[in-house]
Image 1 (cartoon, rainbow, N blue to C red):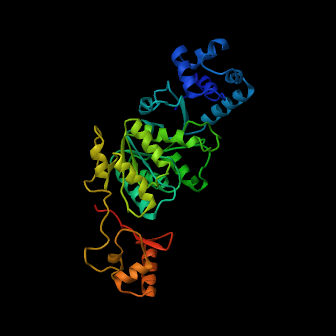
Image 2 (spheres, rainbow, N blue to C red):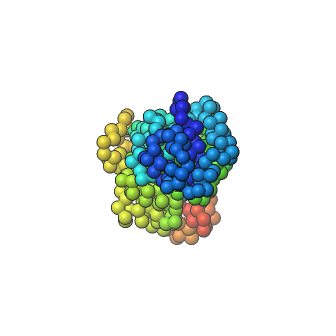
Image 3 (cartoon, helix red, strand yellow):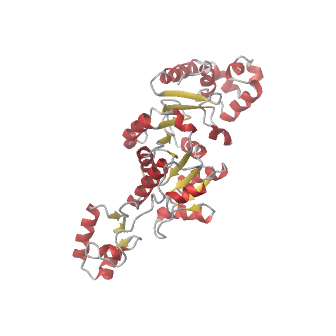
Length: 372
């Protein structure tokens, strides 16, 4: 996309150390566009910024940072979107602290389309990742662009599902859009830059920092009509995103899980606090007022039973597992099998992708697909 003529002025203000977003918005309100702000005497700006920030405003370091960002934006598929740009996402104007600008790599138009955030644990279970990818693909096919944070676990699975669907995906980063973090998701980030959209309010080259991620989370929820939490512990950063969504007036959804799993505790706490319990993509779509799904099958993303009730599967072992984590001794007792027989069947089931081994010597049955 074509960059606006005053972009260097926007960059100069946003890249000045110590000049916060709230101060910048106050100056924009008082004086108009950045070009007009920079033409003011520094004494006129003293009400809005510290002496240190004003001293840094015209420094060589800031000029160099501006030039780096301008040079980055010249690359193919890249853009810097400011508050004054028509491409700036309207949904972010509804939140309390919209960023003055966004660095984008990929399909910028996705940021202005209907979207749903899907977030969850970095240390997700195999079933949690399957659920995230399945829901994301179904909702993407329904016309919702999937927004997440490119973290390991649930985020990555949601992005994969979004890419597999019709409406693609947006990854909002806690580092520069050119910084591969986490490194294990570098290939996924490249695919998103090619077929989806990478977004960050941090300049190219910015390293990931702990304080960046809560700020990133407000943009994940702000870009979306709702936020779906797939798996989350009680101390999960995903709950920060869910709280931000609620504060922004977005719908909050959560998938319930086993009462024995720590990764279900956060979702259950959200449901107790008023989040909507969902079991299928249809449940999500039913709550999004004003959104009309496109080409959406009536029964997508609903797990199918692994075996008919009472019908034996793999020597009867699956029907004795239930859906909660279970140890080998319990399976021996339930199925009347020896430890060697149970271990042998569990190995086959695990290799077939029908059972997952969990920490502590536990095993959990996995759903095997979607009912169409």
